[in-house]
Amino acid sequence: MVTIRAASLAFTGGLVALGGCDGGKQPAGGTGTAPTGQTSSRLAEPDRDQPGLGPGDRVPHSTLRDADGREITLASLHSKGPVVVMFYRGGWCPYCTRALTAWNARLKEFAALGVSVVAISPERPERAVETSGKTGSAIPVLCDERMEVAAAFGIQFEVDATTRAHYSQLGLDLSAWNASGTWKLAAPGTFLIDGDGVVRYAFADWDYTRRADPAIVLDAARKLIGRSHGAG
Image 1 (cartoon, rainbow, N blue to C red):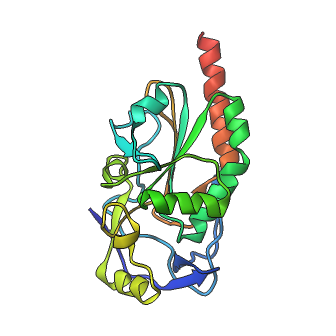
Image 2 (cartoon, one colour):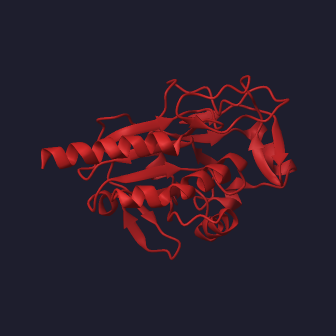
């Protein structure tokens, strides 16, 4: 299991963000910039540099829960057609709430293609409802209550003791916030999955400031739909 290394923390608009900045550099396909005056935005020093599944990988059989506590399988989502799955850390993270807002603004464009968009979070269902209300997002949020889905996607990590202490000083107890009752989180990741459960686009990074650009994922979805129609 990946363990997060100690990092400075900062409040942003009443929300907590892991401290860090690598010069404010934004990768191709990423959204968001790092806060200034911090030293490192990498979440961890993992066994591998690139987290997550890649294009061509088949997604694992996974079960999540919706806001009403009903079990939802990942297969039940992609069996209806292509789906974009985006992982976020929690409503306490300003990068996550900004990402949800950005994705929500493009939701109708994905729907017009017949592509659904869902978010997966470790936070408790009631917290996820609060996050959706705060961001005005209509994206369905599914709870990874045992962090098994994040682990299967290769993006799970655990916050270390030093950083936990910093979070606690700022009034954030992730073990109480998360449905798993642990300090496990998922690196931000976005995956476009086709109807057969195969990843066709993937973006994941241990640097929490880097997020997939909805416009780039939308373009990938258009290409996927175009190929499907061509094959038909």
